[in-house]
Length: 209
Image (cartoon, rainbow, N blue to C red; front, side, top):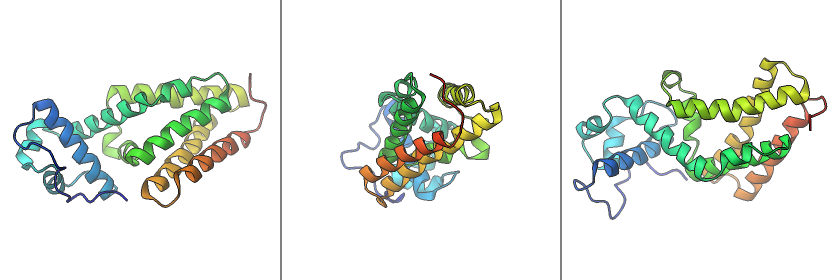
């Protein structure tokens, strides 16, 4: 189950002796816990300060604006996705193979770390304040799938984008349920694959080679 935002700092931490980079990383990690526990933005600065074991003044010293903190949090999540091969999965030649592999990479990410990207990407305030890297990844991965679906199934651009957004719900929901402990990881993996393939099959038309 997701940890409580009021939990004490992890054992072995060194309050007051961290480098600036270490402190920022610790604050980002604490922010992920707090945002996931809340289920929405903005994070409670009081809860974040308690979680990190620091003052609110120190948080603002590292992140003067809250959206700077959330942008750093997005960067950390993108690092994890990159390390686990999302881009390589999405680049596979066969559309169904690429969609299933990319969906599984994202599902496993959500299972490991919670639906933090979903919460940040869907927040109206953050839509225009995401890191450039996040926008590039969205355009490359999701935009790439939309273009391949449009070509392969004869859909309009709007229909292809809607199809990608529909397919995206499969790894998000399966990963969230596994992260919460509501379903077993293997059941979540199988469901994610079946839903992804089902969405692709429902598009009609003959997929291009």
